[in-house]
Length: 206
Length: 206
Image (cartoon, rainbow over all chains, first blue to last red; front, side, top):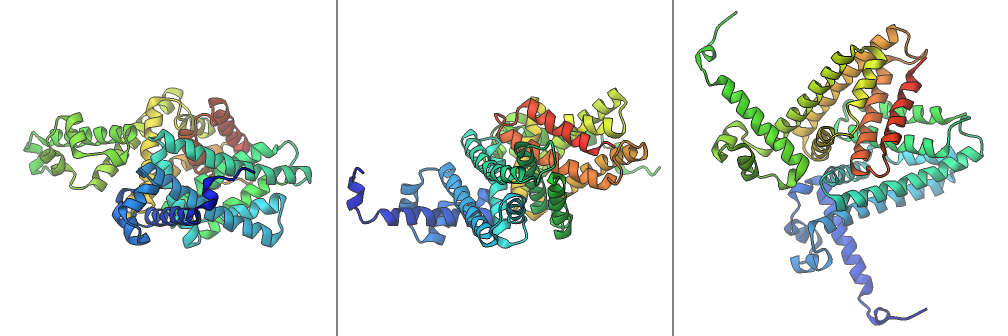
């Protein structure tokens, strides 16, 4: 393996940690005050880094926003992986755990949806953010498709239903339901959300 | 009928027309440059009204945004009503026309989704906008439920499916699908979107 100069620069870990800290602060600001109210000053206050340092890592708002979306998405994926490993679940049981991990019943999950939905809104008029969001959704679809292929091989899916169609269905239902639930928690009670997700899994079963 | 002072004030129509013109200009700006880039100056330019006049009708940005959402929603409902009347459709046939009128295949429909999705994003951190959005969704659900009750009475729905559950399902699928399609038109082709909507209607049929 080729060794480069960076192997001798001890600050490389700090750079990553700084980027992560700035992304986290931006993400939590998006979830609390909203994208419109985000300022470099607010990020300065929350991270302790100066404006110059922040701008060194992120030269414009679009970069800050995508780093925040990535941070939220990584937190979500880590939590999901942990839940899947704890349960040792695969196939439809894994899909059920993934769906549960998207229901906006905890502060963390609500924060993640607030970030996703604000970025989605902005992505409708920003092609760079749209491309990033399309990639995020495509990776999520791949994870779900993998579960559903295992489910299919194991005979957990009803005859005639492909893993790909079921994955598409899952993405549509999870996005539509949780998006509406975040802005309308009065209508989308826990009971109603669980019923929608259970209905989806029942529809898939053979 | 009681006659009030307003019957003798000739400018009342102008007020409504001005409000409508400002709401329309704001809506089209949201769909083109995005909420973040909206300024009173931009609305001045597009309507020809002075800053003072604009602020007379809308005292803050939240009011401007909800008026823009209402304008887009009214345009959508008028188009839908026209299509329903032209087809003389009721029951599942009416629902099919409603779903078609939400697919982002025309400039108008894409504009409406861009406005809805940006407002939805903002509504995650703004309780006033969230309440407004919840009301809009509740009215949409009522229109769909009416179609599905007729479908149910006519025996168009499969046994065991209530009009209310089918309406919920329709809202979730239409919101989830079209939201993702607007930011990812490459994946959500016409063929794929039509297949999703046809799949939904087939699932409802007896």
